[in-house]
Length: 553
Image (cartoon, rainbow, N blue to C red; front, side):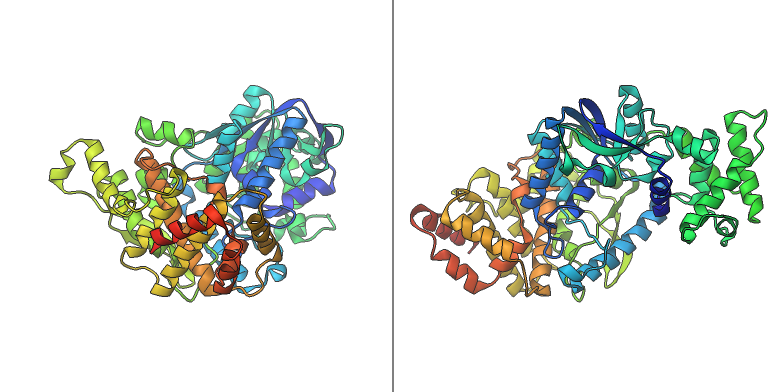
């Protein structure tokens, strides 16, 4: 539910109850958590230079360590494929995020408008990696996580932790904890201060029949519907708040006065909706009824997926992008902070995605939503499929043929540790058509070498301390060309990771959390800085650096 004023109403009217969280189970909306942890980290995590994954990992680990200290058992649920009914909403959101990405790219870090946030591309991959490392129970849903979360919360008698305002509407027996009021960094005596919201208390305060909460959500505005009332409800409100507050208050007052005598819950909702529409001169609309039903009976979205795909998605072993490709033949490419005077960074990984689509669809055309200039446009992408004769061969042989494009570049990696090989495999994409120019190719490769050099070095040696100092200094002279090149590298890296997953991981996967640190690599993009750092290398580290350099040449 996209009504920012709803939380303000709840806070202003003190509808929530102050509680201390300890010794309990907790159902966590995974997407809400990693967004919140990344955007609200202190010190602030980088968004302008492509992300700071090591810093993000520290924040996530600290969060779950706090839960452990307070004997809180987390159950994390992550979103899967999107609902086709929300296509227009998702495209609209993508356009909005694109504008934010452009603002972040063109504004100094401390000068970006409040709330202008863009999630770096590998954050979800890093988050899932941490959940596995820490043995935290989680499930990646096939569809949207909301219905699964509500069911799990009521079945296990746990509260829900999220920022999604839909949980103000759903009937969650043990209540809803908004992440903004979940003060995990202020724990005291092994307890976490928080504010607990329950739907029953909200309805009691506004004298609203609980059966009408879905009606309120549908007309107030969500992903499926919004009632254009031309300010009528706001004008009828006595609330001293701003327009958005007045509007919601007016709706709640109106619904609380609808005569519901002798009606069952279904009939109550039908009458309330009809009267609300009539009140503002609107005709009956099926859209509102469908939106109401989403809250009355939140159901899991059914996808026709192969069993092995479903199982791997649920275990976090396969990206949820496969669901949209298999079910709808679409791919929404998230907005990136990049140089908007150049073509989209996703172009660099175009050929890899074609193989990805080909394996999933059997050669059908897919539709991608990506940036074209400053606008979001949909583009039909032909997938790459092997010949009919090759299709008759064993599945494993087919997959190995598809891998040939990538694997042929790995013969020179014999001296590279297994966990780093996939990082260097992404360099193969730089040899394909529609790639960056020679200068940017060298930048991508040199950045990869510098990055992996610092990954291998011990944590507390002189070199590592210098690297940390460089990161902490920040990036004063942000270069669009550098940002764009690293953005291209991350696109190639992520798509290589997902293709590797689809092929049942023939190459060992690297630790995503150690793959990239934007502020550090932007500093390392300065050749003088690299030369200075090389002087600190000695013995086997110098030899290792030379080996890595030779491989890239």
